Image 1 (cartoon, helix red, strand yellow):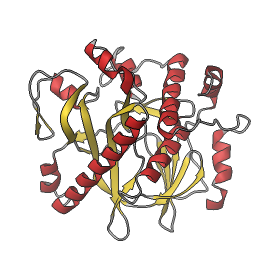
Image 2: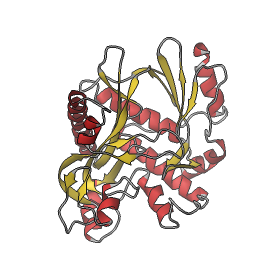
Image 3: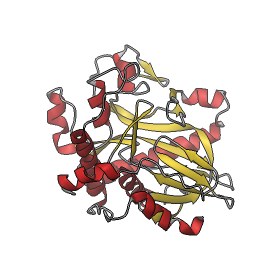
Image 4: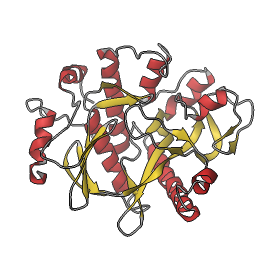
Length: 325
């Protein structure tokens, strides 16, 4: 684990943008900046930007590198379940992948009643709803309870900062023509298999995989292909297994290694959908970075290695992408 001094010193050097005019077809997402090459490849650069509640809020030291390297571990561990878009990793923050025709839904798989966003099952349940994403829920459940079975809660996509995801049921996905029944069946089966693999590996490393989001596309042959990221602390919730039961019994939030930490910090200080988001102090950013790095190290069994501090991250990325200019 990197020292607090290293994490704090990295705050002024975070990667907040990765725009390279030498690369074509630039597209800026909430966290990643993408370029589509004429030959069908896509360059995805993970910045250190942190989004929550449909806003970009801050930048977290080493976050882009943690996301890319965590996703790389999981892409490699799940390649036997589903093909993925990855072709190369020319830089710690960069993936070069196949450009896919992205499916217009995000597939969220859940094992627990939790969450703090508008599309989270706990948010809806707390508001009194008992049929969520077409799934009936019993009365009397509490936040962070384990569900009786793993569920899928799909959403439509909010692609850019300020855009929103919206809940949708599998039946609506098919009836609205977003996917065919055969496509949805394959996507759902694949997502459950990926989640089961992630849950098993997380458990071996003392973690609970609470929920996660998958994104799929189709390749040139029409195959369902895993895209974007997989089982990262941005797209998933992870809790420490050894403290979950005690903290849950005491009505305390679980020890988490994901961005729910920041969501809860914000929600305790304002209504993030109505009020201005307060400035996030350096201490909180350091804590956030430490959690992401701890998740990477726990899952992969590797020590996180910070890049050389004498070269700005964007300059390093430019150097490593020179062959693509």
